[in-house]
Length: 85
Image (cartoon, rainbow, N blue to C red):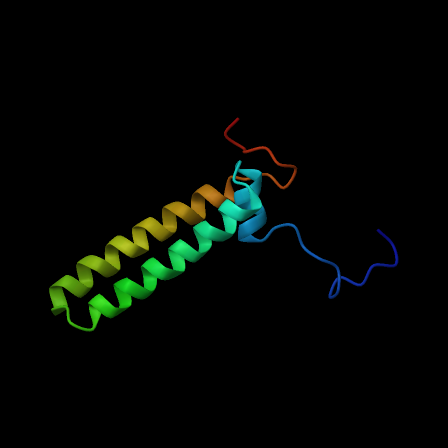
């Protein structure tokens, strides 16, 4: 659209918007993001007491889950349909 400043125009490609496009309600999307943040916080606290091997195992697991979530969220078409459909 002409006349819109891209720095002040709201984007629709944020994680919460993609979760809503996947079928979450706005409240569920926000709660899911809070849950992920809380879980990562608990994992960080656990890692302060973990051995090196446990740290690598947890780190690899978090990385794999994160990559899967990123891949899944990237499948969301901004029109609201997934590319897999």
